Image (cartoon, rainbow, N blue to C red; front, side, top):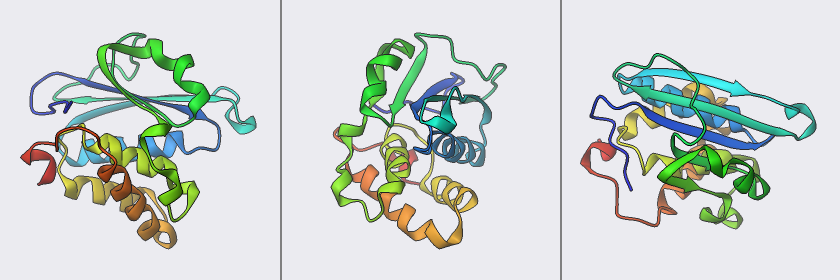
Length: 174
C-alpha cells in the first residue's frame, strides 16, 4: 500500500523501538524528507527510559496543513517498529487497515553496519509514501554525519529493495 501525500489528508507515521536504536533519528529523516517535499510537518517524541533501553516513540505528521504533532491511538497510517518485542506493545497505535513495518521485513544480515538498521527501515517506509527520491537523499545527508552517510545510503536502498508490494508510484521515484 502506498499512502498518497498529494491529497490534503494528513499522513500519520509512528516510529517505535527501544532507546539506542535510532528511533528519533529515523523520525528526523522522515520529517526532513516530507518538509523538503513541501509539506507541513509536525513531530513529537516520547523518550521514556530511552537512555536505559526503554521504549521510545516518535510521531511524525505531515500534509498540506498539520495542526497537532500528536497522533491519537488507533490513528497511525503507518507504524514503523524497530524492535521485535515492541510490535505488540504499539499495535494499538495503528488504524484499521494501516501499514505495519516490522524488523522481520528487513534482511538485517545484509546490512554493512547493524547500526544502520533504522535507516533501512526508513528506506522500506519510503516505498509506502509519495515523497520524491531527491527529498529522501537530501534528508539523509542533512541528518547523518558524512563519515557514515554512504553506509546509510546503502542501508536505505536495502530497505527500499525489501519492499514486498507493488512498486511505489511515479511520484515516489522523482
